[in-house]
Length: 236
Ligand code: ATP
Image (tube, rainbow, N blue to C red; front, side):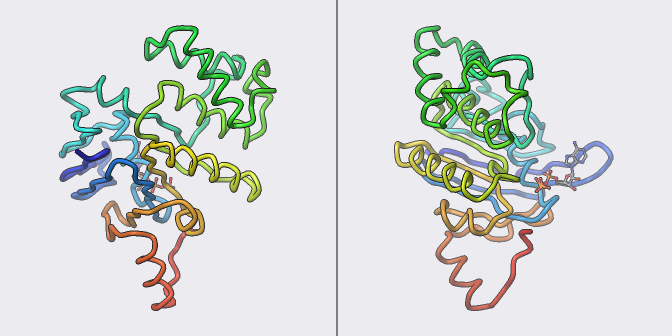
């Protein structure tokens, strides 16, 4: 069984923009998979479809064997989502944001508190647990989104450009955290514009452009080819 299986996925938004064209993708359990591509390629739309935030025009999505339409709860409870935009209640504290999320999954309060402390400590946010989210720096908010996404300990963590706008030092510490999560068994899919990020973290990699997966490969093959072709990918 795959961690994620996309078959013949198409998405045309109302208004006529076709964002996804015949996407077929399999991500195996334990992989660290990168979706790399330029602005407007369709990365966020894929994530939206997988997280049931965007309805596909055609095609199917399975998360650990659970069809997102037929078994939405089983699919959703296996996914932790870190979206691109901050979407906190800015008056809630860091601790509240993480423990409130546990409520959506029916996690008891003691477990929620235990996990919140564990992930806030690991992400270096424990000292900020009583601060409101509006008082946090951009990098702290990114890490808070990760802590919140992990509260139900999903098997698949999906991150949409998690280090966009984050300085290089913090980016490296986030990479280290994600690497550890992957080593502990969490399958990770992230979108990125940074080839360096994909190179540092990912094994599987999909290059997406114009709504199509134009290459589904692994990082080593991609880098070898890019070097041999002196080919510059538009990933600014
Ligand atoms: P970025 O790297 O800039 O986030 P992306 O690869 O994530 O880009 P998407 O955000 O998935 O790309 O966008 C794919 C295409 O779909 C773009 O042409 C975009 O303008 C369009 N699009 C995205 N969301 C909507 C929407 N809600 N309504 C209409 N068109 C949309």
